[in-house]
Length: 200
Image (cartoon, rainbow, N blue to C red):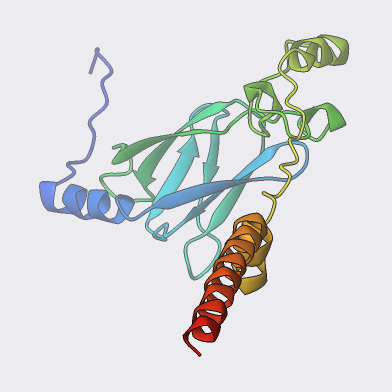
């Protein structure tokens, strides 16, 4: 009577196991809306609450597919979520803890200086909040990679070696051969004619 104390109702292990099983089905993804991120949770049982421990907000599913959205998450933030049974003796037990980290958004990534540039600061999801625009340009400019236009290899001309090519390459030798052969033939024919005449 003189010492106040609180007695919690007993959460039996089978109920706790069931809630943990339901919580294990929860999934999430995030999307960028142009300023901040939205985290979408789905497969959330209507028996569970999801508590944003970072911003102290409680969410329940509002659709048949167990989906709800957590809005206005700043880029680069990590948000802690705890999952609790919605009611009953186990409502004070956290059955799942999950952390969602959203990336930074690089507001300079679409700048023309990032065209064809391999610098990591030109990535869409990188933290450049510590740089002014001029600082960003000066850093990225040092690794600017100009687009290299490769000229096509020249086509190899395939030339077939024909009879006239052969004549063109060896016409001197062929001409000499004809002259020598002709002169020799004339010489022997002339000698034969004289020989034939002497026999008569």
